[in-house]
Image (tube, rainbow, N blue to C red; front, side, top):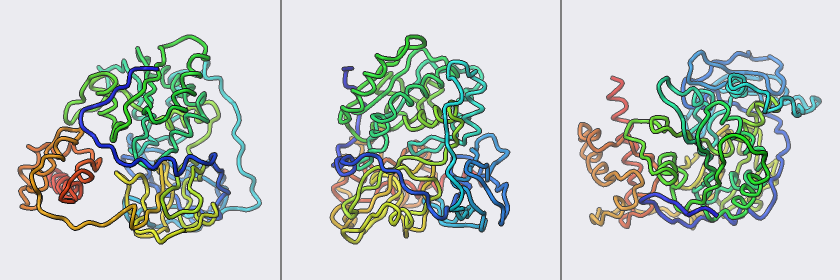
Amino acid sequence: MAKILTFKGGIHPDYRKEISMSEPVREVPLPERVVVPLSQHIGAPDIPVVNKGDVVSEGDVIGRSESFISALVHSPICGKVTDIKKAFHPSLGPSMSVFIERDEKAAPRRYEYKNDPASVSPEDIVEKVHLAGIVGMGGAAFPSHVKFSVPEGRSIDTLIANGAECEPYLTCDQVLMTRKTNEILSGIRLAEKVLRPERIFVAVEDNKKAAVFALEKAVKEMASGGARISVVTLKTKYPQGGEKQIIKALTGREVPPGKLPSDVGCMVHNVGTFNAIYEAVVMEKPLLERVVTVSGDCVSRPGNYTIRVGTLIEDLIELCGIKMTAEPRKILVGGPMMGIAQTGISVPVLKNTSGILFLSDKAAPLYDERQCIRCAKCVDVCPMRLFPTDMMRNVKKENWDNMEDLYISDCMECGSCTYICPARIPLVQYIKEGKAVVSRKKRS
């Protein structure tokens, strides 16, 4: 097994991953309706290319944008477009969405092996990834075909498959690595044809021994050819799965402030993204569904579920036969550290939805903010080596001109500072406010 690597800083929360690992991945029945947001990616929102009353088939494009940084959106079911209007989005608030009611007589589309990976050209791979609407499935939702378009003058010598999955509760990547091992590795080989890196890492935290074993076994059984794929074990620590942290741990390189991984010759994709790339290229399957962790101490059937994009959480609860064992204090889309708290359950699953958590008072207690005691614990754990309390104090005093000097834009909002703070100061909340003001000032 490879040497255990890590980065400076970080925290060790209670991971609670055992809650959702006891059952196999469950296939969720097709919903009777879906609400599909046209903003499911970083970049320009899509424009609807269907109208109210149109009949759509599974996989039909329903949204596109002429902007380069964008991703196609497809219909996840066969049915009729009943409306196109703003609806609740897990992170953006009201967002333009396509409402579709399912045709119960229409059979789900079957996806079969169509293209030999060995015979597909790099250009065809990028095009098929584009046509499938694939985005980063670890949370960022950056369009994958755009990521493959490396700027002129740069080259990628290191390709990284991110299987760290450092967020507590979440296990969807872990089950993919054990159940879709060969598909993930095939997706990596397809990306290799596009990028031609010198080395390839599959990085997994050391609390996922079954995934490490499955990957190492599959790599040994792969046909030789191409760059060597190394399965590397990372120390279990949050936020080990952060892009800059995983690059530092594996290569020793640091991505400078305001720069991208490609500036230091690296590219990182989530393992789920590689699985989606395989399905897009080999099976010509759009990104219509994904594995989502449903967990928390308030649900009767925690686990990992294959869910169609656009399925509302309220419908998912019924489709999965989930009962609430306690009243949730907090419902999160994503993990407990970086997830977005929801005001209701009429929100849809997106391409980058990794988890849906239902947490009680005990699991998500509320605290009163107290005065900073200047212990510097937040500085010690910050993976970006920033000064969270300085940012907080400047936000409170509205000293916006000082924010750039504190590199506030480099904050990844991981929540480590808030977690470790003995005064229970919601540091990330203050930093988010400061980042929003700085962003507005730049635009004005």
